[in-house]
Length: 80
Image (cartoon, rainbow, N blue to C red; front, side):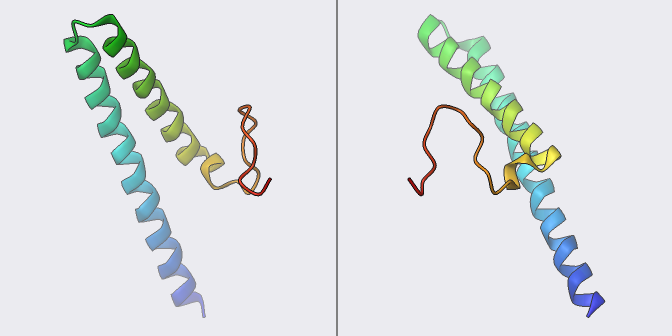
C-alpha cells in the first residue's frame, strides 16, 4: 500500500526535521551560555556542548544518526 508507506515516510521526515530544529535551538542556547559565562570551565563546557549539537545536526542531516553501525569514538558497542 503506497499510501501508508508515503504517510510513514512523511511522519519520519517530520520527526527528523523536529530533531534538527532541537539541535539548532540547543546550539544557540549553548553558544549564548558560553558567551555569558565568567567561569572559564563553564565557558569550555558550554562550547563543547555546542560542538556536540553541530555534530548531532550533521548526523541527522546525513543519515549517520540512523546507521546500524555505531561510530568509532573509543566506546564499546552496547552489545559488547
